[in-house]
Amino acid sequence: MARERGLSVIAITDHDTTAGIEEARSAATDGLEIVTGVELSALHEGGPVHVLGYFFDLAAEELSAELKRLRGDRTLRMAKMVAKLNDLGVPATFERVLEIADGANLTRPHLARVLVELGVVANLDKAFTPQWIGIGGRAYVEKHAVPPPRAVDLIRAAGGVAVLAHPGLYFHGRPVPQEVIEEMAEHGMAGLEANHPDHTDDQRAAYAGMASRMGLIVTGASDCHGALRGMRMGVMTTEPKAYAALRQAAGLSRESNDRKSNDMTRVSPKARESAARKGSAAGRAGARS
Ligand SMILES: [Zn+2]
Image 1 (cartoon, rainbow, N blue to C red):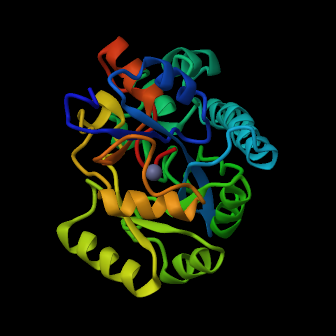
Image 2: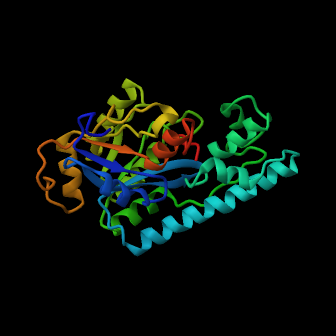
């Protein structure tokens, strides 16, 4: 699909896992370059801050240990949310959540589908309310996460570059607070994902301006989650110049081996695969992880 959409470079940025990268590399044809990537779940005052890491060393110990911890916590957290629902009289089961997730990281949208199946809520959105599993809701359990500057440190220590994903989408419809962005920049963050399909045109322009004031690289990505929110791979890309700057920030040569045009998008392979397989929603949905 990436090739059909005119892309020469894509980054795989699954939530808290790098499991899909080798698979994507072996499936890549026609010289498509797969950049090592991840979307780390950081947390600032209860709100999710997604930090992208690119070009890091997959074998770096500290980062892999943290990713492992984040994944392990997802399982424990899901079990706790199911238990809270049971206490509220909802007969949800952990087994059903696992079936729906079909091997993907367990996230709240999976649990939301169980609530819809059980007729507890009319649709997925109704599950993300204070009544059920919205942030701070009756059956909500906070997940283990690192503070955003720590996420930047971890990615850099692994030889990668850190980029703040979709800064306009934090939570409760608010953007990531300015002081958080500044602190991340102080920790050596390389870029801002100004060009995200869920940003408005005004937000894209504002973040591009902020990036240039702060000396950050402007990146763009489709944040493609497969069928869940439309197959949008390639709708937003990273300019070849920005891509070269990111490579340079990671200590690599500006040009990737033999390529002339370096668009970069990022996709979540797990979500795409299981969505394609089941022809229905799968994987995680944006900030709702
Ligand atoms: Zn995200």
